[in-house]
Length: 324
Ligand code: GDD
Ligand code: MG
Image (cartoon, rainbow, N blue to C red; front, side, top):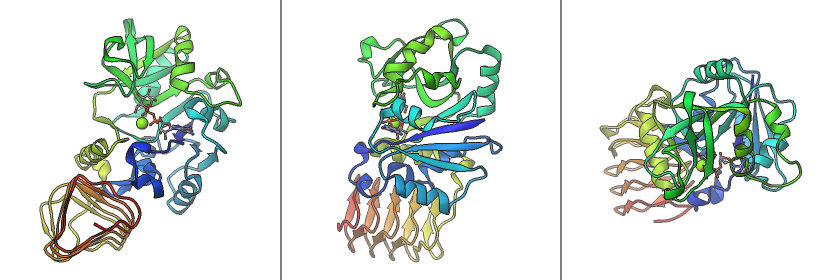
């Protein structure tokens, strides 16, 4: 089987950090969001095809430098084609069936189980579903017997939502689904194509493990907390000479001698946290400097951001080389 991974979004809700880095390369618990998604794939798949757009060259360079157990190929879009257009553009030579993954979801699911459900029930595909409180930002499924999806509404008003079970962004589809996407224009797979597939049989697979969409600052940090609670988070240890509780994922070249760490921190490559500084529930990207005695909580600091000595930063998202 092959996998098609959608990576074209602009990450607008994570600006300004996404002005310089695509959201899929933001490290959560020491590993880019995209890699947590790719970790879901069985290691014996034939190929993962990444449908890229925004900052496609950065994604391409990253996957070349950090190989996975299976081949990965990127197919960039000249202009954003939406989820449906992106699938159509990158879908040539796809397997039947194929995995479809959004690249900004943190999910705990065994894809072999999803495949087994597809093999048992047939139809056009199986969509994994997560149960959430607030369905408004998602695609919502109405479910019939056998969890057959009988209706699907993308981003409904709460009163129009048929259930609290939403498209978790991890699915299996028949290859023929790609032929149902009109070529040559931008479109949303969820809005314009999925409703028309329901008559062929689309089945839900209810997730029982954790799930989140990491598309906003709050949810990105929540996703990191979920991953730190799981082995897939590759939990690191405190950097040499540091104190505190952790967990801290210390990436290559990061240092924190004399600093104090609370829970859930990623120290990006070559980041530096000075003596008596305190960092907690945060992501520090490449080359961030937190100077002596500074305090960083609940924040996502973009590459080469500096927090000056003694400053306190809470709930901030910064872009490249910000000075606080
Ligand atoms: N190639 C390509 N081209 N990919 C795109 C494009 C594009 O123009 N636009 C978005 N994507 C990618 C995003 O990078 C993301 O991985 C995925 O497609 C979904 O796009 P989002 O912009 O994150 O959509 P969403 O979060 O509002 O809604 C989607 O995900 C929800 C679950 O998190 C939908 O699939 C919903 O139905 C679903 O519930
Ligand atoms: Mg999303």
